[in-house]
Length: 151
Image 1: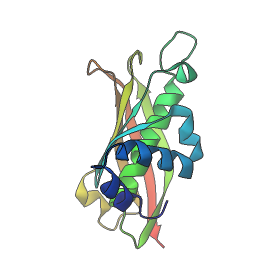
Image 2: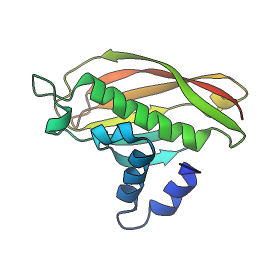
Image 3: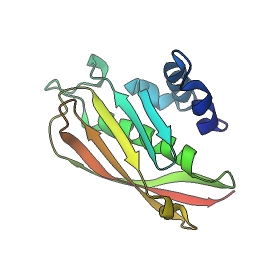
Image 4: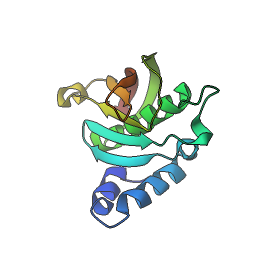
């Protein structure tokens, strides 16, 4: 998706703009359609999406499956990277480390965060990620490592 962050900024204040953006984002990265993410915010160094609790993402005990939560974390990280990586560079995930801390019994707000100085000429950028239930309980947290190189 060419200049994802610019497109988000154009659509975020338009009625249904975030929904339209989320649909386009899921079309550009089709695997994210499995979690039907709702985009909450996108900015350099921070992005959030909501993974709705719905039948398609539940496990055998009726909670949001851990891998669905990880997909939400990766979607948030991808939006953060699109808004943070300079246009002269490209990025790809190198790995993910997560800890499952509590049952995901509600919609999950998945957030990715970095600090501005992390982007200063480094090829390995660790992105902090967390999934949070509606009551504020962190259910999944971890780090996604990005490999950032010049184009």
